[in-house]
Length: 322
Length: 250
Image 1 (cartoon, each protein chain N blue to C red):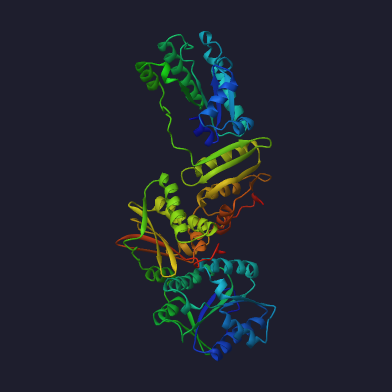
Image 2: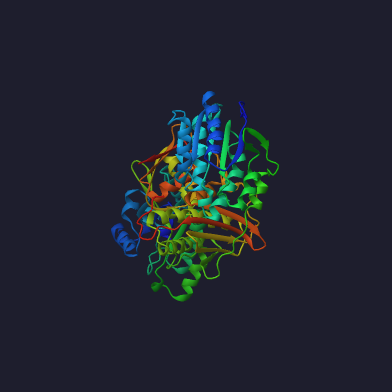
């Protein structure tokens, strides 16, 4: 098995079932990188971090270890943290490696789906960098319905020491569009309609009231208001009437759900791409993705729906660091 | 109208038939903060005679020159626009009769419009009978009434050095106003300090206006954002704006 040495991006999934399999494959990947003097970022769950450290005989200066529970706490921030790391280490053509694993089985279905959409987007987002990305998935705990998604979002799969093209690999934009379903808002949830710029102040007041009711402290609420306000503003500028915002809970998550009658984003990757320096749009969705735990956008016969999901504060917890 | 003009960052020349401190006290009583706008040169109070001279012998060309000078001074001082407003004398109309007043106003308004100044004349309704009110209202294309919505944010000029303080919330409704005010004040001062200490909420679009302006600034020019509140700081950070000409003063 070998990874590219030129300036191309490689993105491979490793479907493993136990510790020895993980240690052999990920250990070989990291050691090859060390031999080639490449910087390595390993963002994996705490258990896998320990396996990798054990395999390497402890900490290694060229390897940056990150606990996935923190790194992926917010899917959008993980993208940004990875981009920042790539800009620091790979911007002058220097090849680098990333090991990326999230404990998908411990995430809510919405977060797991968002992670797979992010895996699809990664093929485009990290394309400009000479980076080799290895994404281990523990299939002993991976929900069965997610496995096809893993194969559709990685151009190549690692089987033992064999690299095989993933026959199911799908165009990232098509995957994201197909992997986004509309979830209708519960009939009884609180909501507010909006149609004019002058309604924005009332929408923010509604959000503040609902977030305080759900137990969010001022700081966390202010960030969510900012994120939801961007989605509302987008619906106002690009969507069509009627437009409405709902706020409700779904399991452990609070949902801000915006609907309009328009056709939705022209580019399904819109919410996944960082705006460039001179961008005149795109900052709002980028903020929306990072300020909440996951973002869903889907269009069907009932309109365009964007949902921002954020974990509810622990009962009794004071201000939650975001 | 005065509150709206000040909120929009424009300079206001307030013309009063009486002493200026009485006019300011009346404005304060009407709920308009005058202290900072007066100190920052945004609100100027002049007597009727200073501006319009003796109406009986008004030289229109002279008046045009006066207003043109006032407008260019105002733009040079970093205000995007100039509005002139004032109390008309009531019982003793300066032009002697209702017809004379209307004729005079029509002339002045047209002239101001050509120069690019917005003007509004205030009449005390208690001193006018109904037909007179109708005649006067018909002469004024946008009649401002009390009970207008409070602006979402105020843009307060301060000087020296030329700066801008913003208070309130910024969104689609007033982001373009912010851009207009910042551009005007940058013309007067290439290094502009924008005090956001009073801004509890700012959407990405209005902050982008600032960054877009900064990206186009010539070398040596820059915008300093001061007293940025925590919610606005988070939005700036997460939205991913970058411009070398914006400094965040912490």
